[in-house]
Length: 68
Image (tube, rainbow, N blue to C red; front, side):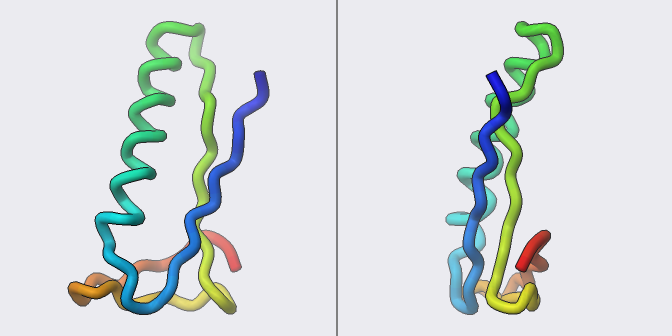
């Protein structure tokens, strides 16, 4: 099975936990698979924002996307 790509869209005012929470869950799934299934991964994650610009989260944390 090929890894699935999950793109998380960023916008000004996003709650940082709404970005980092799901990405953490997918990273945990990858860590489990790496340990139990000969190093396989199931997910690739990326973040994107309009124009690829950094965005300010609701609580003031700046998030820098990996894609546009």
